[in-house]
Image (cartoon, rainbow, N blue to C red; front, side, top):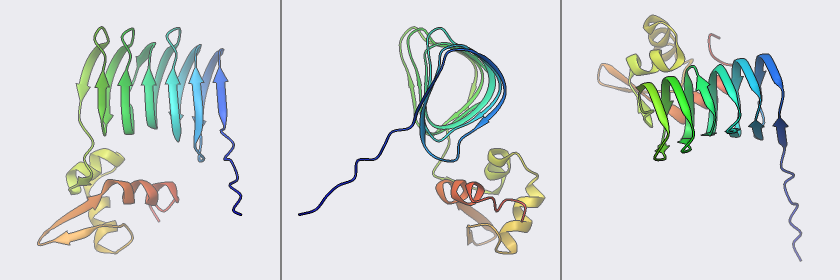
Length: 167
């Protein structure tokens, strides 16, 4: 007889005014209903409630926005804008769902499963020379195709999460 251990869900519900940087290495279910200013780096699910006012750069897996957000948003799996959402800034989703009534004021660049050197430099916000140096020295996961490099976004995300960038 096999026993399955139920995974405990980590949920954090924030209904306050906060400033600074929040970073989560393990997946969590984070819901923000108040004000936040700074940087958010999350794993798992991030929900911005309908009463939230956010002025931040956000990186996350699955991001659902129901309130007002100003900043750069990178959603590695999916970005969902609910009908009452107001987003100002650049968004970088792997998948995007915008409900009727949501407002997006800014630019959208879809994340691709594979990136070339220039796209990866923009994605990581580093100089192209650094990308080429890391790729040519074998420090960064990638495949050389002729004179060009191709990088799998998920492998790069794992490489960055392991703290290997710049080493």
